[in-house]
Structures are given as structure tokens and as C-alpha cells.
Image (tube, rainbow, N blue to C red; front, side):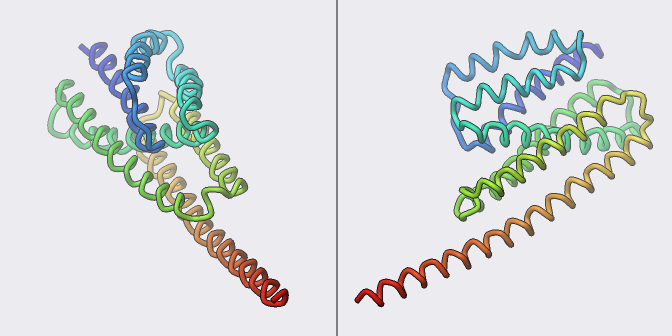
Length: 224
């Protein structure tokens, strides 16, 4: 029964990866895309039993290639951002399940709670981040290569920190909970810093743009 639960959970997580990535990228899948995703699920789940969490690296590479056809280099941002969101969903959900241990030991209840909680967190976080992305798209930041590079570095570093942390399967729950609070806190602090940086850079870019417009207008009036 536990093996079946793991299989269902793994399939659900993989499907959620492509859902969150679709939301962040702001694209729609066609029939061929859905067939590709369905065809990927079973082989990846089989590999999980042989290589464990390392299969995530393969999923990331395949996902980047898949999305590169649609959004080019932004596929890197999208996939790493997606996996960070799913890590946070997993942390929050495991903490919730630990609370349920005081009331029941039924594995089916755990599975249902996990799927519902994980799915809700994924939907909420994905759409919240998408809202921020849409705000950035309306500004000059979206075309600023330095800013995009900083965001990319942040996502890659954060992902590998979380990836290394989750490879340790010998943690007791108290330690896991402490580490969860720590990593979630770090992610939130860095996110706040990035938001502040975004508004600062945007303000400077607007200021520079206004100066350029004033200078251009001044030169134009001199010619007249």
C-alpha cells in the first residue's frame, strides 16, 4: 500500500511541475505537449526507484529543453522557480501531515491530505508569483539583462540549497521542522530583498529614462 501511495504521490508531483511551469510561463499546452508529459511520467517514476531524488536533475534538464522551444532562455528561470515553489509546497504539506499524526495513522488519510495540501499550495504560490511576473513585465525590468541574471543566479543557488538539504533522509521530525523554518525564512528574506531591489532598480531606470527624454527634448528645442 505504501508503494502505491508513493507512486501516486510521485505522479502527482510530476504533473504539478508542468502545471506550475505553465502558469509561470503564461503558455497553453497543445495535444502533443500533453502526450509528451504523460509519456514522461511512467519512465521517470521507474527511474526514481533506482536513483532516488537524483532523478530530479533529469526532470529539470528535460523540462528546460521542453520549455526552451516555447520561451527560450526564460525556460531556465521558469523551471528552477517551479521546483523551488514545489519544495516549499512539500515543506508546508509535511508539517501539516505531522500535525495529523496526533489524530490518525491511516496512510490513505495521509495521502489525501498530502495531495490536497500540496495542490492548493502549488496553485496559490504559482498564481502569486505569476502576478509578480506580470507586474515586472509591465516595467523596464523585464528587458534588463543584469536584473534577469541576478534573479537566475538566486533561483539556481536556492534550488541547490534545497536539493542538498532534501537528500538527507535520516533527519528526525524536530530537526526537519527546524530546517524547514530556516530555509523558508531564508527564501522569504531573499525574496523581500529582491522585491526591494526590483523597485529600486525600476525607479533608477525610470529616472534615467526621464533624464534622457528631457535631454532629447532640450536638444530638439535648440535645433528649432
